[in-house]
Length: 203
Image 1 (cartoon, rainbow, N blue to C red):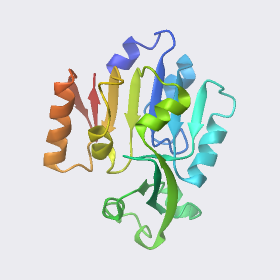
Image 2: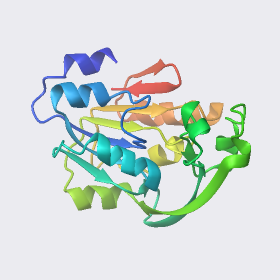
Image 3: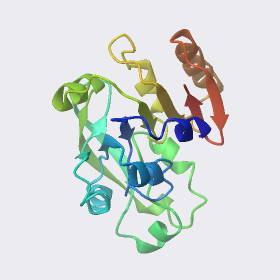
């Protein structure tokens, strides 16, 4: 993400990250947050990983943490996740959660994953509610990693209210049609797009 390096010194840089996990494991922006003191909000719905996330940012008062999921509307949804108390699955990368069971089962090549999936009802906030709660008026970077829900979130994002300077989202679990729809939506809102592995970077 070369563009991030160019704006790392921007005063009052503000980000929102949807799907924070523990704040470190495979996190594309953790080094920037620590190195440059970025301010932002990190949203993580699962209790186990939210506790780890809280430990990661315990001494960082400029980071706000929200124990919820982002969805189309406020309420509750069923979240499928790998049993977090299974140390072996955590060791091999089994820290996954998704609103889609089928998306989670794409990772069934991980030994034991299929038989260690549990469900939880998690609180959900819309983008509108999240923005109101934290008085968000601008976003420099929006990061999303929701194991198959990025498409839905992009479709329900109100670009007329807030237009993030940059967006990093996971296209890995999108169908070809969904990926194309997201690309067109973002291009219509003035973004350029670059594929970076399983993610797309829009700026």
